[in-house]
Structures are given as C-alpha cells and as structure tokens.
Image (cartoon, rainbow, N blue to C red; front, top):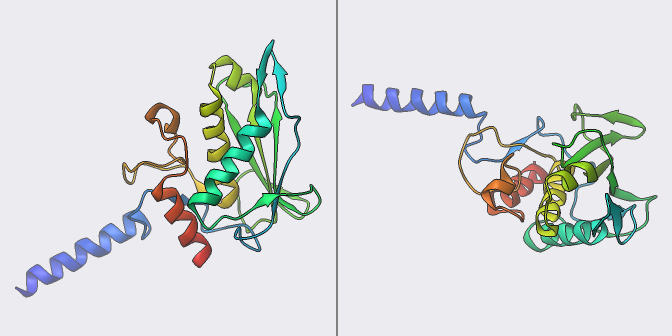
Length: 196
C-alpha cells in the first residue's frame, strides 16, 4: 500500500513539473501581466470606422469594439473605450508584409518595447494585419475573432502549446476550430493570472 501511495505521489509531482503546475490549456508569458490589472481602464481604437484595402471594405473599428465587448461580457476584463493617452490597450490596423499573419501584439513598459514580455507591462498595442485578412478572405466574424485573440495576448495569455484540447480563443488554430469568442478556458486563464 505504501509503495502505491509513493508511486502516485511521484506521478503527481512529475505531472506538475511537466505542465508547470498548469493542467488547463491556458498559457502565460512567465506570469507577467498588465500593471494595474484589466478590471478597469480604457482601450483606444486608432483606425477609421471602415478601412478600404485592395478594393474591399473592412470594419476594423467594429471588430475591435465587438472583441472587447466579448471579453467584457465573459471575463473580469472591463476595459471601455476611451482616449489614447491613458489607454491600456491601443488597437489599430496595419499592412505588414506577411500574408500569413492575421494580427500582432506588442507590449510596452513605459517607453521600452517588448516583442515577448520579459516583465509586467503598462500598455499593449494590438493590430489586425490587412494583408493577411485580405489574402485569406477572412469574414468579419473571423477577423473579429483575431481581434479577440490579440486582446488575449494584451491581457497576458500566450498560445496554447498542446497541454489540453479545450476550446480557447488562444489556440493557434482557433479559426479552423471555429472558436470565435473567448472560451471558458481563456476566461479562467485571465482570472487566475490577475488573482496572483
């Protein structure tokens, strides 16, 4: 009996070490997060209501507003639209020379840029890449999901690395799998990150 208990304990410790203590699918950037939290504050969208790209009209502002609303309705995130000066997250559209990139997130601590967080940050800039959206002919529902995915990065969630196959907007294949809004696992991940 004692051997069985010791074996189970060793298996539990081994599993904990392998998953970093994280049995859920959400992943973090070493538990770094936005300074001041996400339960209050502002986001700012720095794009026009419609954006014409390659002869097609894209509703980027509406996509970002809907994505922030999805996060607000499902999670502890309660950022509302506000001015650029005190925004915690700034959203815009770009034309990057990568047709396979749908969106990006860049974090800042003061004036220091972090392409991958190595500390807590004070502001995040997220963008939808018009070249990728246009090339892959994403629908408004799909590029709104990309906006929600990038917001997840701005809040501190990383891509899933295959620890669990639960629905999540932070899965790298979220569009293929049809996960267009923050899922329970995303919501739990954000809540646990900001409870630390």
